[in-house]
Length: 250
Image (cartoon, rainbow, N blue to C red; front, side, top):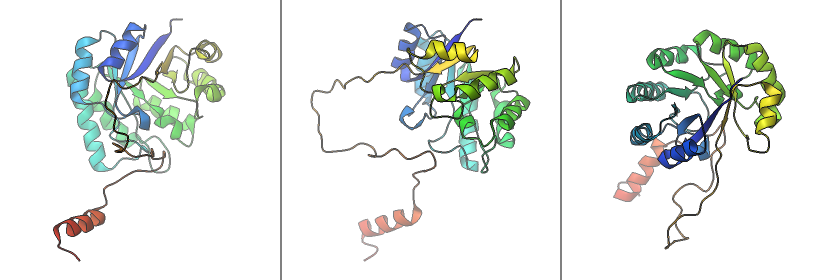
């Protein structure tokens, strides 16, 4: 049985590197430090121009949980439409209910807008309360594959569940392990689970080419929010700061 290796990348450089390294497919993302978010239209356009292997595109409007507001769902659906029109191979996305189930009502319009695109339900699956219930829901939706670490911190720790999911899924839906797959464990994971697809980053850390470096400013937060935390704009705090800055308040 042939094996498809999907490499998760940020940007054009990563996409070209994945193809050069022998990847069979890429998943294009932004913001991998927070688990991945939707990449920009410009990034997708350039990747599709320069890479010949199939491109899946992560559709996730923000980091954190997978419980989305109506406005976030509107953004998500617009992104799916734009990705389809751009000519990508498919999307990776996922929406959950407040009680930790696959949100089939939210996923149905996503599937409709995606149309002929290949659809992966990403690792939102790992945050569901019942993997078997979730698997059946995704089968009903017509999702092509499930990206999962076996509801564990990494694939090696979730091998038992992944193997059971593969057996239950049969040829109805693909179970694609992702999370912690490296050169030293990749073959064992494939052999132990019988999967036909795997997902990994294959990343390394590269030093900046900047000669001048200012150690004082910090361009982002010094702490990545947890899985169940979100950083939101607080209207009351905005009002206080605007008032203080303009002298409208004492």
